[in-house]
Length: 331
Image 1 (cartoon, rainbow, N blue to C red):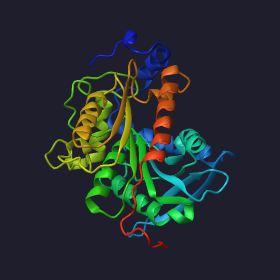
Image 2 (cartoon, rainbow, N blue to C red):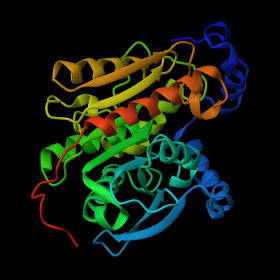
Image 3 (cartoon, rainbow, N blue to C red):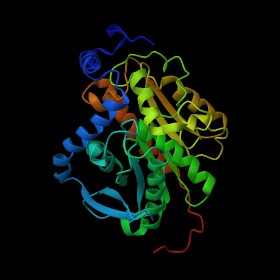
C-alpha cells in the first residue's frame, strides 16, 4: 500500500513525512542499533519520578539465575480495591522499556485509579521468542500473587499494550486461557503486531511513516529467529494464527487506516466477535502506526486517547474474572 501525503490526516502529515524520511526501511542491524540507542536515551528520563504517580521497582526471579525487572505505577494515595493493569510496551519486540510509556500511565491512573505493572521484558535483539512472552506471563502471575499487596482486587486483572505490546497482550490472553492459572478480566491490544505472514493488503508494500513493510519484516525476523518463514510459528508468537479464540476476555482496540496492521487487526476483531468475545473497535482515517504517541496533540490522537480511557472506565465497571481457587489469600 503506497501512502501519499494527501492520504495522511492534516495534523499528522508534516511529522509523518519527516518520520518517513528519517526512520523508514529498518533492517535488523538498524533495529539492533536503535534498541541500544533508545536504552541509553531512556536512562535519564527513567530517573525522573512524576509527582502524580507512586512508582516502585521489583525484581522477580526467572528460575535461571536472572531476574525480570517490574515497574509499578499507582495513585499517590494508596488504594484497596483498584483494577490491576499489566502494561506491555511497544517497539516491534526489539526496542523499548517500561519507562517510555509514563505519559500513558499518568493518564490511565488519573482517569481510572488503576495500578499498572510494566515488565521490562527481554527484547528480541537479545533473546527471540518466547523470551518476551515468558516474561510477560511471569509478570502476570506476579500481578495475581501480589494483588492484595498492591491494593488490587484480584478479580479484575487486565492486560494492555501497544504495537508489539498489543501482540503480547493478545498472546498472553491465549496462554492464560489455555493454562488456566490466571483469569484476565479484559484486554486492550492497541494496533497489535499479531501476524508474521505479511499477507494482507495493508501489510504488503506499505511505505507509511514509522512502520513500513521493510521494518516490519525485520522486526518479525528478529522476534521469531529461525522460525521466521516456516510453518513452525505458534499462535503464542503470532496470535493471528490462533485457530480458536473462544473464551478470551472482552477487548478494545483501534488502528490507523494507513498502517500495516490495519487488515490483520480487522480480521482478528471479526474472529473475536464471531467467537462470542465482546469487542469495541475503531479505525482512524489518515493515521499511520503510532500516530497517537508520536503526535499526541493532534485532534485525532486526542480522540483515540479519550476513546481508550472511556472504554477502560466501562470495562472496570463491567468486567470481572475471579481467579482460579479464589477465596484463599495468597502470600
